[in-house]
Length: 459
Image 1: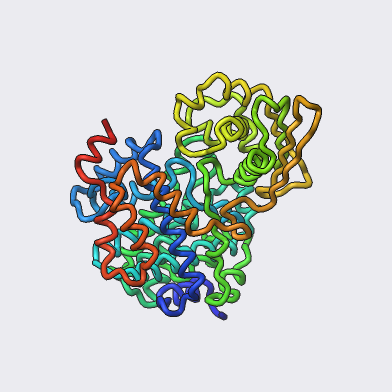
Image 2: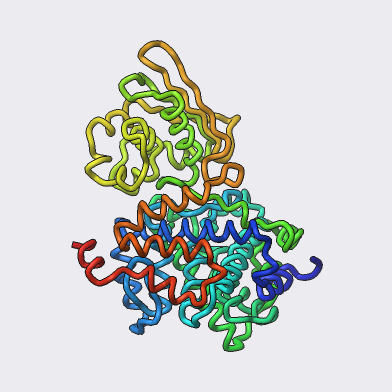
């Protein structure tokens, strides 16, 4: 598509209809939605969730919008809290080429507007597709290494555009109004890696969702903003946040090649960059049946980025560092043959056996031949044998996708703490047949926790 990329992308997002989305893309959007809901329900176990919930309760005092696994809040409050819940326990999606989590920005915005206006499942699905494609397309237009070199963090910078696209699609914006919404979203784009190692990296994501909703609601009021934000010479996204970027990539094959299909899901809590290593660990214990008492030394080879970010916590402190720690994940998988949130409770990560194994028997080393999420795990056994396992594409990646049944199992695992069993199955059925859902309000009603469940689970 030729033309200014902001306006071309705005036209695509505003005009996208359910029937124009290929069936495989629609089904993947359902996979992503169900996975996102699982992450949000798990997010009630996050260490800082109560702090963000307190903030969300103060963002106006109306109660028109549902919190996933919670109660009702204002539209702004629910958008912020749902965005944080999705990312709270470090197991939501990742668009790997931009290291950007997409769902915490796009899904809360889409759910909030679709619920408020009683819109259909078909509308919701089209909005989710528009929002995720917008986010990832703007992302591929960045020269990501340069963007990262300058310290920017993708969710807070490009996430607002996806949230605005999803909300604007549900509000039936024309292309001009959508482009205005993108200008307003860009005016709120922020977030840097100075926050790395703190929960603020997750705040970037929920703030991105709210920024996108605010951009759409202000654009709906005909507020004036630039409609050429991406490529504006003075202060545009690509001229300011990177080195001019690759704006042609934003619109190349738009509508025929779907970049959102490159969004990876995470079967396990833990940082996205070490999902390849965790896949290799599970291959080690499942295929080779290696037990922890057999292992004298475990060498984990990964890219420089992975080791720099996640090879620095051999003696982790608390849940957040455990979730980021290659050393702890190795110990947990070896001892438990599992990696769910149960492995990230204090009783487990403070277990002396696991802590000692992580600190004394696991080496994380840079291998310059490896890039991205590639990993090699080498176990040296007491018998003198060495077993080596390599992973190039972690479970959940586009090249190694999760089956719908695996995503359903993830949803059941984490929904059980907030929702009754019958309702869990009803939600799975509703997402599976999203195109037949008459009103998103029904889905959100089922996702709210009953009073007695909220009291019981918080006790």
